[in-house]
Length: 362
Image 1 (cartoon, rainbow, N blue to C red):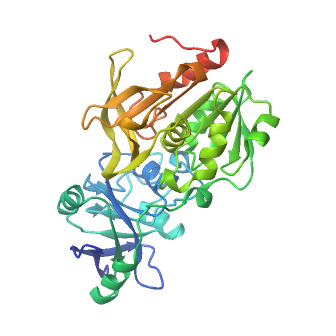
Image 2: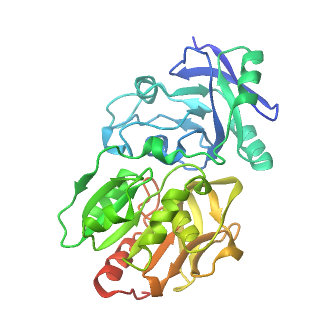
């Protein structure tokens, strides 16, 4: 029998359910609650380091039905603060499965709450934005106190928590890329290493140390938290602009935009899912994209770059380019793990930029 549990958000909203996964000694966990609209790929979502400090509420009702496998991990361990599920499958049915999702959560000390009306929770987060809160089998009084003490991702550096402590190399291509690990997904590393020799470095690596590695280009990865809390990382990117070709994704996009003179802001409830339509303004094509971010680049702040992609749901900037300075970036995830592969061409665009100093729109 599962223990009764509850979610208490800092704005006072309460949602009932049952405890699952790892149970912390305190009887609760805290974080910023966000919802994800993907219908599959829950293990890739849970292990995406960009969710550091956040509690993921899955809008798809059945989670865990095909188990877990090391092949689907985006990091060595999950960095999220917990998950919220309507129906957690107790039986895994898939030939790739190496165990159940709940056992995986227990092993990695990730708490969960199940049996929650996730439709109501999602509507609340859409109306009120991403809200800090607490959840677990503790009393409502304890959860309420913890919810008021919970913090969001604003002005918080989560990157140094998730970045690799040791540099490593993948791939054997003829071109050498230095990839900043702000919380890099392994699917990104695979897409890059299929084309290049890639050296993945810690987020605190200096511009001089990067150039000492004699790369042909620099890649800025995805990652968690508020880009405004990362002035040192922005400073390094600013030093590299104009010196070497740069490609950024997600947080890397926000850091590049900031280094080019732009500004960022927090979206009410962010973009989290694998079904967001994005238009490539150069080609006119529409891509279905995977996304995971709470912050975006302000449209009226770009001086040295032009907008290359826009979100067709809400008009948010999804890509920028500064051709003269040989750099470009996108807010969404062209590596798409999980998600569609519509935007994989962007890795080929980076290859063209490195080899020819420019790219052509197909």
